[in-house]
Amino acid sequence: MIPLAIPNLSGNEERYLRECVETNFVSSVGPFVDRFESMIADSTWAAHVVATCSGTAGLHAALTAVGVGRDDLVILPALTFIASANAVSHCGADPWLFDIESETWALDANAVRNALAGETEKRGDDLIHRASGRRVAAIMPVYTLGLPARMSELVSVGREFGLPVVADAAAAIGATANGARIGELEADLSVLSFNGNKTVTTGGGGAIIGNDEELCSLVRHLTTTARSGADYTHDRVGFNYRMTNLAAAVGCAQLERLDFYVERKRAIATRYNAELTDLPGIGEFPNPAWAESACWFSGVTVNGPDAPSTETVIEALRDNEFDVRPFWKPVNMQVPYANAIRNNLDRTEAIWRTVLVLPCSTGLSDEEQRRVVDIVSTCVKGFSTA
Image (cartoon, rainbow, N blue to C red; front, side):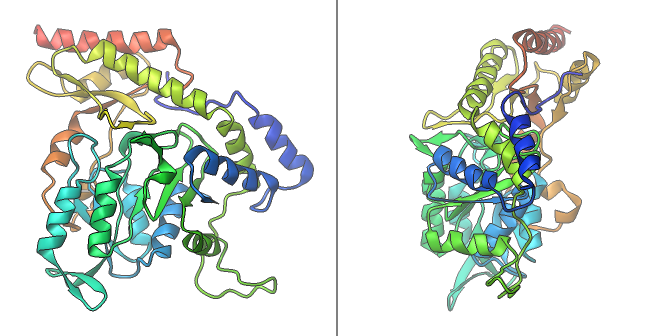
């Protein structure tokens, strides 16, 4: 079975892991953690980095650091992996779900601004959602597929209404927007993931990046059990969220090859676009001129009367030993969030079923990609001539 997206562990991973074992630095204190954070800062142009045990843990800590608490609302796009919403829930808060825009498949800044103007009011220092009486505490855009959202517009909305912005940049390492790297995109904090299927992996891990020294110091404090002294004094409820030296060792080896990985991901996406999007009913993933996606996942959209369903193409690929799967089911369709507050989600509900994610591991061979292209082409051409 040719996988959808797996790690490429052909660098210094084994050497660095052996060094951890030989030096006995295997827990959350060790030289590779410091090196990993420094390498993330260099690759994202963020001033401060805090490595965490997972991306979800990073989101939870980041939301907590900007003040999200029990019974609050956090603005979130409905089209995201459920972990984004779960991080909000871990704070005791709930997501307020919004639609995406067509060009980026990311949070629609205009929809957010209009809803905040029409459905909230200031009560003292708090912004209150009138219908529920709950405080709106933050905006959390998601960089879908590794493509940055329109952060200048979203941050502008946040400043207008006094809301911090925490970006779920899980898969976006290597991406740029208007020439800026993700650490420069004005969010109060941004969170990366290094899960096993990400472009860069630590096996499981994350990182919180930002440019506000005081805020990032709070994040570091929260993720290290809020320990305030060597005598086991803790000044608030904190989290045991730090990355281990073992995981960071793998991450350092991965980051040494970041440019190659991102280049390879983009080349795979470019080939799918070039060879498939002329077929009837086949479209490409978002590719705005002002941004350059990290292309974590690549593939095509399948939609229209002359195209088969995504399920039909997935079945054909699986029959030919390719691991292919549907894209994220929107948060509003998930059982834990069936009753979440939501605004119009027309684009989300129209787009998500059309998304076909295709094999895109950095180790995918040209021949393997040729087979994928041929199978998809055969499915589409056979359907359109039936």
